[in-house]
Length: 443
Ligand code: SAH
Ligand code: SF4
Ligand code: F3S
Image 1: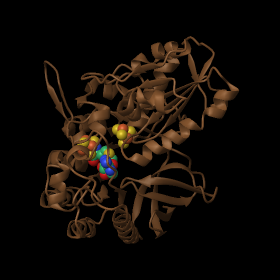
Image 2: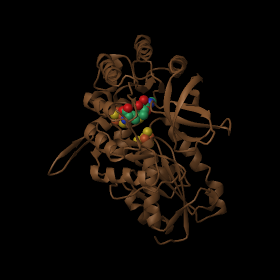
Image 3: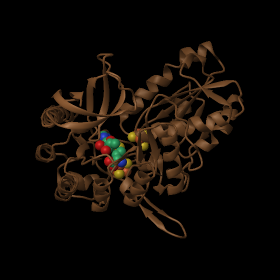
Image 4: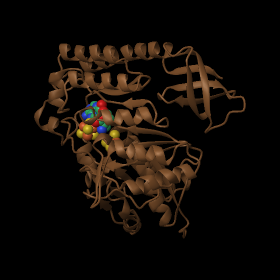
């Protein structure tokens, strides 16, 4: 690869998809001669990969971009680009609203980055926010930015067609498209060759993965099994599963392939049928529960997590109480919990007033968090005395005599370091716990 003696600093916000995209961006820029730096001060170009999912995600990025003023004073040639979902949502407006921004590039336009950087170097505002029906970056081999990592992401599809009424993703990421299974397998094998021990297959709704060519059609459970068989010594995870498309086929594939982790992230969003209807989630509480029952039956020791948010349009105390009851019933190991944040451009923004007061949202959120903390603790207590296979990810932050890693069920476990190193699979007997961590000893 040729070099242009220029350095790129990349900063990533938002979901795992963005983490994977940043590695694609790094690869494209390295081919253009840039070197990746971990020091902002020596960068010629800073790219911030951004998220629009809730207003506070955007506020954080704006603060960050404004903070680059100092760097720009010291290095007047420094270029700053906003890429990803905020770039897509705000477009040209970013140049007006954030004086430090020189480039705006949406999630489907990264191949155009080298050209856009050249434009920006010539003093123009460079922008490309065109969405694509076909772009999957299938021919890009992502640069693994964190060389010490043993766990990588591979995106298997892009975009989303679900248009949940509250959600900005279909607007920032465009239409759903599945990537060629061959290029997915190639990338997974490349991770294996580089010493990675775990891969997470990514999409907004992986269960609707479907790749067709003239000869055959590949579904998500088929792809999952192909991946598992191709790298038998790697752990396989995937996210996110939309409950409406979760099939028993997928559950059986997980159950029969030892290296596919017994863990499912199945966001419920709300426990109330009327709220779910307003959200356009296309399932009911009953349907959702039947999915959880199928998981518990087919994969008896499966870890389970969810996304839930409170305070959506017209959510009454009774509606919210149904969410609380569902949480008690589902007993998630982990839940990501939020307050509804109205997103301009969505169906809800246009048609469903953000009519739950902030104080009520806050109170409900706190109630959910408190309940989930208690459930997480109880679930962890249920693991005492059991042995789990843990993949070591690093040295514990609390003590250099201990390592941490995760069980197949995605729970963090800590145990004495001895001679174990990052990337080892170790059987660990759990002896105590907190709500967030299992504590044990290798056996
Ligand atoms: N594709 C995934 C979710 C991606 S967004 C799925 O359908 O499950 C991650 C989470 O952010 C969502 O599951 C939802 O809980 C939350 N979220 C999305 N839009 C939101 C909004 N406008 N306000 C608050 N939370 C939101
Ligand atoms: Fe958003 Fe719904 Fe698509 Fe998930 S499935 S990304 S919540 S529109
Ligand atoms: Fe955020 Fe875009 Fe992901 S809005 S959650 S970075 S798809």
